[in-house]
Length: 350
Image (cartoon, rainbow, N blue to C red; front, top):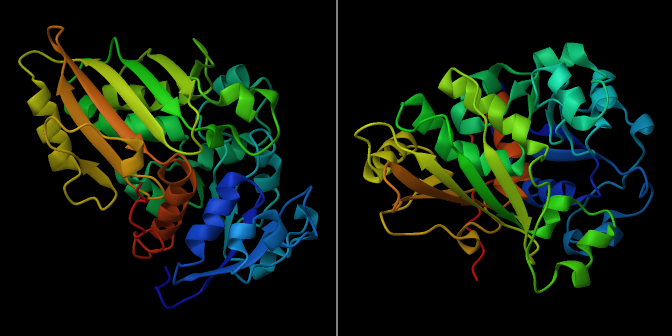
């Protein structure tokens, strides 16, 4: 455990991506953080002021390659590398070094499920069994004791924060859950891809990963644990022409004698003391512009016209609560720091 006056020596692996940039933006105002090392394989040796001009006022180290990192000079590592490249890197780190991994490489507890959905065997299965799923508000105890935390995906974060308490309380049925999700283009990463070009994305909305998206097994894994039995969901993500933000609309079946007001009341009670999860009053619909740039999740509940049905809407910033902000929140918990350190920013509006 450290206190807020102790500087934590931090390394960020993969600092040239969008989540790396968000980590830098948020950690720059974290009173206990000292950014010591940055890596960027293709951008190694290039000043961060050139890679991200919006960060030029920060005195940041120049990125280096991972093989040139001196690990003994670090206390904590954020791994923001692409899926499939993280396992062997983290396996090679000194065992005492605490890590939050922002990729999907350690989110799935069963290596066979990982292999099925990601197309190759897991290359660090011993570490997989050590990793703790870092949905902070619902696994704070596990995160506090962890050395390696698997940061949840953005869609699972937005969907699971309302769904898990409702399943745990038996207020909704595990069957028939439908998740309809919208995300800004930054969720696809910073690499150049034709489908993410302005002319491909602008002035339109498109579904992708229909019927088989890699967040499905992550969602079903956590829902199964809450329900106590297998859960099969219908999940369809959509790409919309904005840079950041995520809106998730979930359709649920109510348990006997339960109403939408009961769901809202249960969520409000569950998250009453949580600084980053806000349950809005009846009739208020969460929106991405109400959480943009913040570590907040906003949740609203509406009755459906169908009998025994309700609609749950949640919004997050996919780069903050859906990635880098939640990663810092997990770091704070792992190190015994005040959980909100570095994350006090109000949302940006308009």
